[in-house]
Length: 248
Image (cartoon, rainbow, N blue to C red; front, side):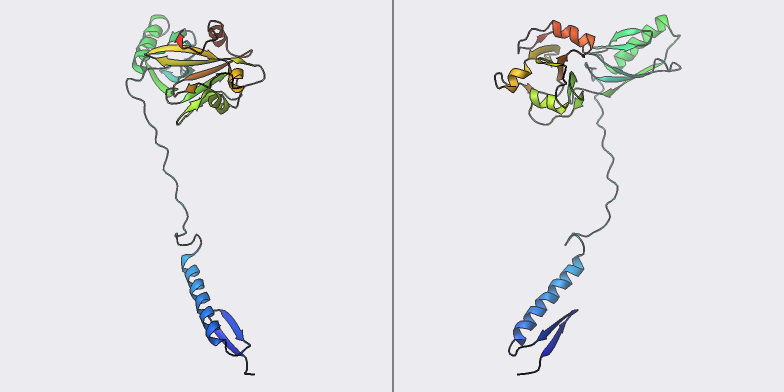
């Protein structure tokens, strides 16, 4: 028997304890050496260079068009110079009004920010301030999202992409609350420039007894319940339970 021989390939040592295997071991060692060299050159992440990631770009804010008309459930920002009590963010209700201190309810829906600015300037100038300086902006628009309100666990506006059904829209708000009347869910929609509303039975939809209607960006979904706002409750009382949109 021949003496054992030792082969070194890089940092790995192989001992040849049997005769006639030098060729096989040499080939194997060469393959391992190439593999280790390749891994060392690539580093963590394989062939993709590994380096710390930089700070991502800030989100791009898409401004509303100058002739944008305020819609129900939008949020507008009103600033009155030297009148901090009147300045702030105001939600437009389902009837299209905002409620300001001292002034009371002012119709805002279907007005541009410039038109609402002029309107508030006139109202404040007549009763409360001399030459008031008013500025109005839209803080949140519902026309690019679906707004879900009423007896839901987490009301708010939700961005939608592609087809969305009524059940999916309610699910975005965490589902209905314990006091919800799921037999009556209103969907407010602008059709032909007019605000219209239809009522649906969510229970029947869940049971497969009624079709699940499609919801579009700009729609407002309100689930009936004992804890909903008085203005919403009043509207619900006037809506027949028909899945047909009609003016309100």
